[in-house]
Length: 232
Ligand code: IMP
Ligand code: MG
Image 1 (cartoon, rainbow, N blue to C red):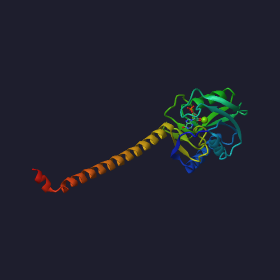
Image 2 (tube, protein in one colour):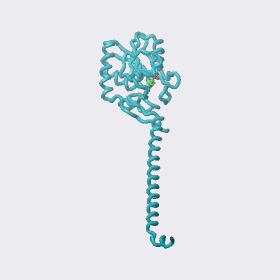
Image 3 (cartoon, rainbow, N blue to C red):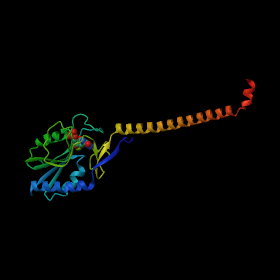
Image 4 (cartoon, rainbow, N blue to C red):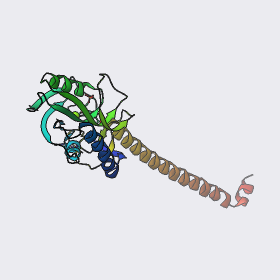
């Protein structure tokens, strides 16, 4: 299997920063639901790590359901409408439901999930997302609890988020250096190297030709002036 030509770039949130924010977020959720029973619906696969870390911070009676939606198909932009690929939802009807997702980008995935869950007749339906990436928003979705705001449309990986199913296990969140940019950088590096070699070659050529010229001149000077005089 070929590896995707991408690189993990700048770290946006370290493991420690994520931990600290999760403590705060858990406190907000705890305060909101007090001691009521809660059904957490994790939207897989992206929210797997976020959900696991967050629910362990909640001192509430919790049920857990899962569903899987995907729309990226190994790309960095959504390819078509989000598709529901698995649905293991049992405890939603007449219950307080909290949907957990990794990131809201265009909003299409979370809007789709909420539409499906609303049909199950929950008592209340709230959302909690690890990241709110605002610049490409198309569908208006209500976000009740949010880990971090992202004002960039750059693709990010780590802490559950993937590119072509890789990087989910990174303990931090980082930018992804996309294939085109990696390719451009590599080409730039190659052409810089090529230029350096060409410059070195032409410098050497110049040096050797000027040497020849100098030695040639010397030869002329070495000719005994008498011979020239003799000819004249
Ligand atoms: P949306 O439907 O455009 O809001 O996209 C939501 C889904 O796309 C998320 O649940 C993620 O699985 C995925 N996604 C969006 N942006 C990123 C990103 O920057 N990195 C990784 N996955 C992303
Ligand atoms: Mg997702």
